[in-house]
Image (tube, rainbow, N blue to C red; front, side):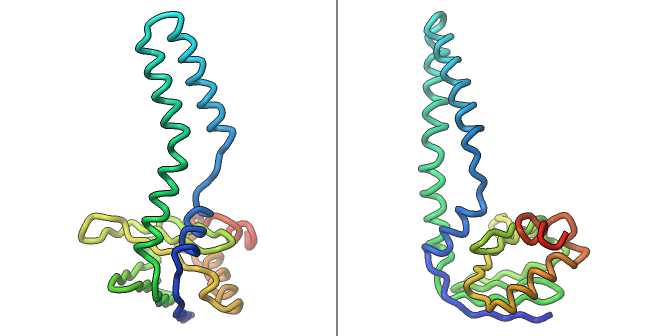
Length: 172
């Protein structure tokens, strides 16, 4: 297998891909909110410090999505531009701007598939001790290349149990 794709990744495409990789758990958020409201009510009956802690917890729960959006946009801005992706049986070569990463399949810890992109995470570190990963936009690949890559992800023994999303369930 040797897939090569040259495309221009826009900030909007990357932000959408990153948003699709994160899980949304509204029930958990409302349960946490209810917990902190109860803690705050308990604090009104007793020590005021508990109420302050509860209000801080509520503020963190409801401010997190806005902070997450800001981080997503900053990340998308950094990795937007002309992108070259080469997928082989040995690994993934990913280059955007002056940044180039080679990710061997043996180092991959997780591949997340969503309708917009594949996110590949590995245990390799850059010189700045940041984990190496790549977001491969599906729009940059032809349908044949997408099918070939999906089949590879489902069949490769090095990636067994590491693929999450439609690819893992589609070929299981």
